[in-house]
Every structure is written in C-alpha cells, then in structure tokens.
Amino acid sequence: MFDQNRVYFFDTTLRDGEQAAGVNLNVAEKLQIAKQLEKMRMDVIEAGFPASSPGDFSCVQAISREIKKVTVCGLARTKEGDIRAAAQALAPAENPRLHVFLATSPIHMEYKLNMTPEEVMAECRSGVSLARSLVSEVEFSAEDASRSDVEFLIKVFKIAVESGATILNIPDTVGYALPEEFQKLCRTIIGEVNAPDNVIYSVHTHNDLGLATANSLAGVRAGVRQVEGTINGMGERGGNAAIEEVVMGLKTRSEHYKLQTNIDTKRLYPVSRLVSRLSGVFVPPNKAVVGANAFAHEAGVHQHGVLINRETYEIIKAEDVGCTPAVMVLGKHSGRHAFKDRLESMGYNLDDIQLTKAFEIFKKLCDEKKEATDADIEAIVADEVFSAKPEFRYQLKEYTVFVGPGMTTATIVLTRDDVELKDAATGNGPVDAAYSAIKRIIGIDPKLESFSIKATSERSNALGEAQVVLSMNGLKAQGNGASTDVIKASVRAYVNAVNRLYSVAAVKDVKLGNGNVNGNGNGNGAKNNGRAMAAAMGK
Image 1 (cartoon, rainbow, N blue to C red):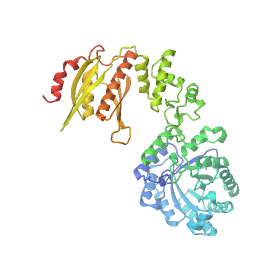
Image 2: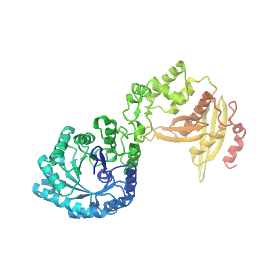
Image 3: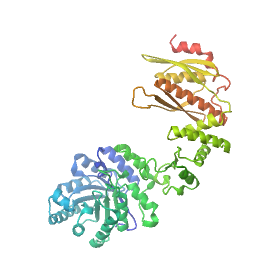
Image 4: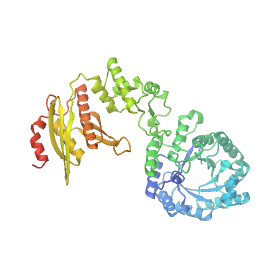
C-alpha cells in the first residue's frame, strides 16, 4: 500500500538515462550505480529494457540478483515477447516491477503504432493483463500523454487499472507541457480515473523546454506520488527530470508541499559524480544542486552576506547533498570582507593598514587572472605586506640539461645576494633532475604537491606556463614561471615557489628544516659543488 504523504522516486538512469547520445554503460558499471542508488534509498530502480538487447537482459538480471532493498524494474512494450523477457530477467528480484508502455497520442498512434484508438485500448488490456499474471507489481505508462486526448487517456488508464496495474504513469515524453497545464492534466486524470486507493499516480517528464523539474513538481501538487527521473537529468535529447532537483525542491520547500521522501540526500552529490564519471556525461558547473558552482560565491555582496549568515544566499546547505561546505571563489568581484575572512582562515591577522595594502595588490592580481588561489594570497601577504621581514631571494642565472640514454643530468646556477651558487644532479627526466639540483643548492627538501604546465596558445612558439606548489612544515607556497622553453619555465616556477615558501616561513616564524637562513641551506651545497657535479657527470 502506498503512503499518500510520501513521494516515491523511480530512477531510470540505467534505462532512459543511458539513451543519451554517446552513453554506453556495461553491466559492471550499471551494477555499481545501482548499488549506490540502493544506498541512497531510491524507491525503484529501472534497470533496463530486457527485450531490447542481450546486454540489457543480462543487466536487468544481474541487478535483480544483487539489489534486494529496493524495487527493481524492467521496461517492456505491450508485446508478449517483451513482457515475457522482462519477467524472466526480473525473476531473481525480491521486489520486481514490470513496466509496460503504450503510446496514446494521435501522432504516435497514427505514425508509430499504425493503430486505431480501439486497437490501442485492446492492446493495453492484453499487455497489462499478461504482465500482471507474471509479476505482482505492474506499472503502465501512456507514452506521450501530454499530447494525448484527455478523454481517451482516461479510458486507457481505466482499462489499465481493470487489468491489474497499480502504478499509472503520465509521461511528458517530448517535454512539451507547461507546468500549469501539466498540473491540470494530472489532476483531471486522478479525479476522472477514480482508481482504488492501492493505485499510485506517477509522472515522467523530459527537459526539452527546460521544464522537467517544474513539471514533476506540478504533478506532485496535483496529487501524483511517484516521480520518475535520472541522476544529473541524464537522458536523450534535453534529458529527463533531475532527481536531485526534485528531491531538494520538496525538501527545501517542505512548507509548501508537506510531503516526505525516503531519499538520503547526503548521497546526491557523490552519486552524481559517480554517474558522471562512468557515463562520461559532464555535469555543467552551474548545474542546480550538484554542479561545481552550486555552492560557490564570487560577487562581493554575496560573499559578505554568506559570511554573516549562509541563508542570505544559500537555500540549500552543501552538507545536505553530500558536498563540501560553500566554496568562496576569490576573484575580481570579491570584496574586502571575503578577502579578510580567507586570510584569517589561513592564520593571518592583519591590521587595517596591512589589509588595505594586501587587498589592493589582490585586486591588481585579479585583473591578470580570473581567480586567486590560497597560494596566491599567501604570496601577496608574504612578498608584499611583510616585505620588511628577513627573506630568501634566489634567482635563476643559468641552467644546462644533458639528456642521454638512461641518464638525465641538470646543472643549475642560482644567485642570492650576488653570490653565485651552483650544483648538479641526475633525475628521471630534465625537470626532475633540475629540481634535485635546486634542492641540493638550497639545502632543504620541500614536498612537490603539484606540477602543471600549459601553453598560452595553440601556436608552436607559445609560452609554456608552469605552476608548482611546494609544502614544508605545514606551509604551502605556489610558484609560477613562463618561457618558450618549458624546462626553463619549470625551473623558474620552482625557484619562485621556494622564494615564496621562505617568505611565508619568515612571516609565520617557522623554520624550514635544518637550513641556516644566513647561509646556503644546510651549508653543504656550495662546499660540495665540485664533487657533486663530477659525480653527476660520471667523473
């Protein structure tokens, strides 16, 4: 018996969602998704269309064996072969549902089915009756219901109920309906079919006009208690209703709907990422509820409001959908309050003069790059605000790299306070060798957290922009370097990161390893330059 105070969710990611262009999930991938949907407490998982291919049959069968806590569903046309194939695939399921569909709109009946309305009604009766004789729970869908004649639709649904269907689905198959007319359609069908209390009404909406979520919620307002959709709204053409959007719509506006769901919303974001990764369908950053920017704020006014009270600009808590808390993206539109808050979260407490200076430099930086990372902000404070503090300043004077069979050697020459420092090392490639030589010179061994390099354009003479992030003793610093020589860019980035790391250490009064701030690292680099170079060169 269905609870009329609850909205049930029917996930068709593995069936309708897979019909999206370019998506082809194998059995193992579908099973992985199904297991996560089960953990999310999805009410129904439509595992596939068994008669459509041996692969779909195997998938429905495998999911029926593995998934025991929720209903597993298989799709079928009203044809006998489809229905028997679906019933056979669902045989291992503890809670099977057979979902039969038949088009009811004039255009589909004439051009796709080549059937008269009378033939469609007879087909509905025979198909649903056969399905009910094989499986205890049957759902009937009137394909293209939103473009069907309402009086005819009501007749077909009555036949479906008489034949044993307990779930009546009202699809907006081509995303044609508007919310107000779809709500009216659903309310009319529910009132006129007048089915027994054990029958539940469902909606299946498509997003061709961007109205799938709105139409699903309109159906709920009309009395529908099952919503069909997919994770991330995946599906053919414009996609299906995004389950995460409908779920959070009901939860966020609970005072409006006054209905419960069984969904564990904290699994929405992780499952979204899983489906995206396995299907290869990218989730747009501005996608509602699960997009990368769903909880990000850049505008200064917005950031200020969120810092004071998250509800000023956030109607959903990131934690409620299994996402990390709000990300404050610092860019050219960010305000002083957001900048100060980020500094404090990183351990800096600046007075008004220092903050003003740092904020001015930050704004200039944002004119050159869209977003400022924490490492950029650290550098602003370390390099500019606290410039009076003792700090190291290494500069790259020259470098040479020898790449031979089985061995790469780099010789690096740095200067500090007009003192020339030289060393050499071998490594796994020219960049690794160069970094090893630099570490010998400076006498410390920071951890390389990340390294990336990219071209500034598609031209062969484009600059290579390298970015390095180093960490040591709880500190982190980012360095950048650019050159038409990618090795030189990489070396510049590393040296730049080292300088910034020392600056941050000076600001926070943190010692880097056993290095001597008045000498050359651990003191061994300069003394052993000759021996090191000889060893590196094999002499």
